[in-house]
Image (cartoon, rainbow, N blue to C red; front, side, top):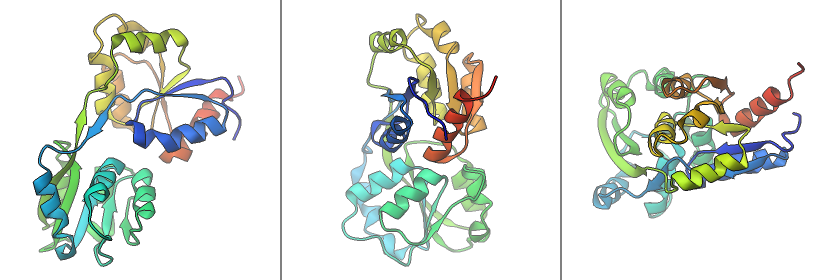
Length: 253
């Protein structure tokens, strides 16, 4: 892997999720700028979440849509995760977070890191009569819960956290644009939407001209819908993203 020395890279994940990626970028001598396009907050209904956590031992499977869902659950969980309950997650970041929380049995896609990829895993092919709890943010795509129900799961959907708009304003965004941007890492379609809709029309053309790095075609499509034209697909996971950036910026002309 070659260096990213001098490259000013925006990391748009929620602040706590950005730390590991920022550390990897800085290890490659990039100037990593945390610019969260999503804020993560506790759910409005903590009673329902706490009640769900008291019944974890009764489950056959727990599904987490993101590292934020894992963080939200373990922030409220009293005691250890029940060792007999496997956990299903979508991407490498969630796999790593689940391991950090001491979960031994983790189901995850080997290649396609999204809801469709997880539903293709053999262990989720037949869930008839199984008690499954899905931890996610408020709202979200319906593909995963519908897929689990189609496989026969007795599904309970639990809002573990809320996604809020970015906390910075158009003035702060303008300051970051003025300071320079060699690339923007965008890890969710919702973040892409906020970037182009929350700050008025003053910065739209400049935002559309930036170079975007994203690990999923759905996110790239969301950026393209808002007029972004420089889109680079990255490998999955933090290390994969950084490797992809290094590869891009150190190409031989």
